[in-house]
Length: 209
Image (cartoon, rainbow, N blue to C red; front, side, top):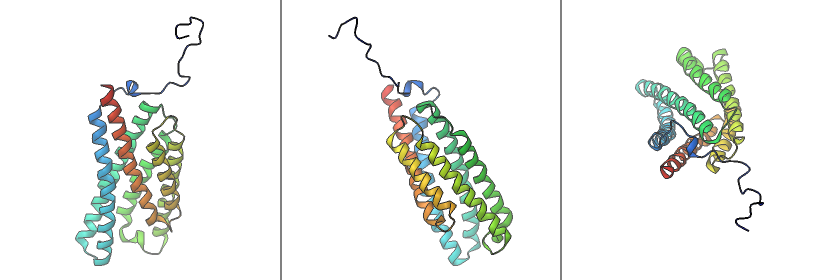
């Protein structure tokens, strides 16, 4: 019976960490992060095109543009990673994301510094090139680790898990070096998935308000 005083209470055994627990977040902020994620994805595609054109023409102006554009995208990507960490912790109670994310931030910035210091030597046969591509391989391994951690987050959106798989696959491909250029594609797709994650969070907050 509906009003049986002896009936077991009808409650969920696992409470969903809903928007009510997302203190400090607003729908507008999450929408901004979503659009920035799209900018990061499209910017990476544009960067690849400009880099190919710069390599083919050896235009120094294009090469400088590629360098600065790459730095800007790296900084934006690091910012989005940190915001995702905070969002996942607030929305899903995610744990163990800090280490891979901070490692990604550190190695991404380190590679930009090494690229600036080595210059053309980073792509010419020799120890500098081995060191540079060794760092990229490590970055790929960390990206795969980050993808595994995303997949272990409980009660996450389906697109959140898709993002985890894309980062895992892209990271493994990057770590091989041989498949590095192809590996950029799932990582770009992961940025699109990140956009959808932030839009989903924004929708929840808007509906809750």
